[in-house]
Image (tube, rainbow, N blue to C red; front, top):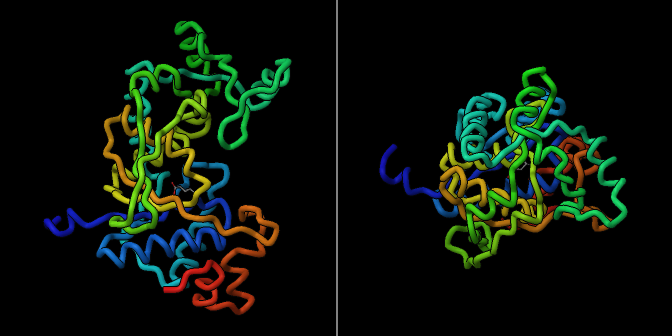
Length: 295
Ligand code: GLU
């Protein structure tokens, strides 16, 4: 890699292939693309197919097709998370060695049950999900090891209180636009609001949080440009970057594209999928206008 290449800002668009791309993805991809072009940066595409139950090959093919239709160009080879599971395992091991994760044998149903049994308004994370009640946190290590040895399915959760204490005060740099030379402010990270998050899933060696920080570092990403809905999760990402001694990218969390009722777009609503809009005769220029991008 020459010196020029080394200092170029690195952007990425990182869709999960669990549905067709919609207008919200188009905005994200286009903002990354515009910014990369404007500052002679690099644009990477990453397929976040860590979820084996929801990722489908035809949806990956559709992502490439929709992005090419929008006239986006990205570097190859494209990174696919499913091809880097060993790396996530290593990162989880690193946290295990720091005694900052523990195995959790609870099913979703068991967690819902434990929360419902409490006679109080249960605290919720920034996404509105009930915080993990801590059922497996104090399991004796011997007992946990025995259950793992019997093949009982388990996730790995972060010991949030201990991890936050180790890290101390954290923050991230939030830019006003996708451009690296735009104004920025410091946002304090409050990962404790998420409780003991899952870092290793029952069915995959990483959760979104662990995979995203591992990959951003592995790919040398310097500018993370993604939707506002992921802004609060950045606190977890900063914490993991600190614990795993990974470099810290800067962030821009952009506005979301909302539906007519002011709700966030969802992959389950086909009417805003790029393929549906293309089939209805819209051009890439129309898509740019629909997401209120001019250039
Ligand atoms: N894969 C995530 C999604 O499709 C985005 C991850 C990120 O940009 O950090 O919502």
